[in-house]
Every structure is written in C-alpha cells, then in structure tokens.
Image 1 (cartoon, rainbow, N blue to C red):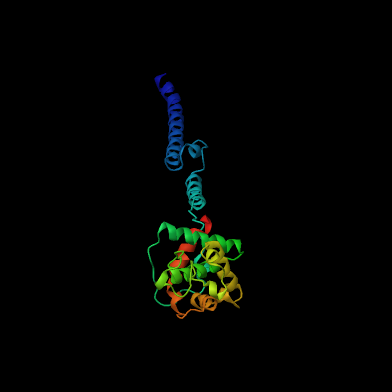
Image 2: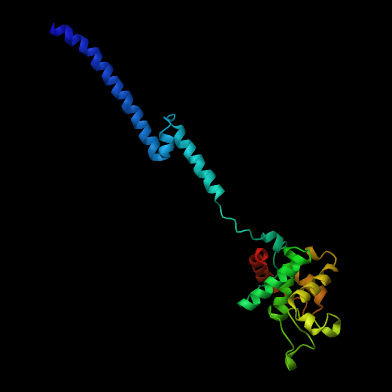
Length: 221
C-alpha cells in the first residue's frame, strides 16, 4: 500500500517541480526585463530579448529628439569663404551690442541675409568700433559721423540721419547692393567698394568677430 502511494506521488512531485521551475524561469526573465526596461516592458511578459532592444532604440530616439539646437545661422552663411589674414577682436559693451542688433534689424528690414549683416558689422568695427560717433572736433576725420563714419559732405545724409543707426545701416546696405557679386566677395573688398577708405584692407581683420556677433544677434533682433 505504501509502495502504491509512493508510486502515485512521484509523478505529482515531478509535475510540481516542473511547474515551479517554469514559473521561476518566467519570473527570472521578468526580473531581468524589469531591471533593464522598467515596469512597462516587464508587465507585458515580453519575448526573451526584445525588451532590451526596444529600450535601446527608444533611448537613441529620445537623445535625438532632445538634441540642443541653438538656432544660430551656420558658419557657411556668415563666412562662406573663410576669413582672410590675422583677426582682431575687442570687448563689446552693452551699447555696442545694441548697435549690432540695430545693424542686424536694419539688414533684415532691407531684405538682406546674414552675410550682408556680417559685412556691415565688420565695416562698423573698423570705422567706429561699433560706436555711434558724433563729431569728434579736431580728432574727427573730416565730417565723418556715426557707425560707418559716413560724411554729410559726400551725400550720405544729414548729421542727424547719419547718427541714426537704422538710417546709416540702410544707407550702407544700399551702397552694398550696387556692388556686383557682393555676396561672394571677401568682406574687405565688398566694404571698400562702398566706403572707399584710405585703408582698403583694414576691414578683413574684423570678419571673425563680426560673424560671431551676427550669429548671436540674428534671432534676437
């Protein structure tokens, strides 16, 4: 009798052990999936390895979706042919920064692009260090005034007009538009054709800083 009962127990024990091993295997998979993939993946009794792959893919997508884009103009638009020669740079005060914004705003209003703004800012850096200069008395270069050191006696406008940043920038850009192929010229060549300076190569050294200033101001002006 005891042998018969024992014989009946053996299949039951074996079946119970198999169920426990199977349950433990599923639990182990769920634990591994949960540790890597989180509760949402573990709760789905996911296929053995698919949970990890899906998580890796979602992390990659998330990183792409949240990639920072500062929205600044590209360097190719600002300086399409690179800079020429050694470059100079000066500290920029809040007043000078405001003048950069005024130049950028006037450039946009004139329907011109970032390259035109770089040429204008680079020209102003050379002519006035981005300061809206009035008459400097004995130190004045003839009757030159404003951001671009334009001269009333040469037909650029009245002193009041020339010392208005929007007016003076627009006047400069109107001259730039008359230069054939200005968009593809080196900054110093384009600027010189408008300004007719005694130092035609002096504008080149400001191109790098002008590009940086326009990049920072383009979407804030």
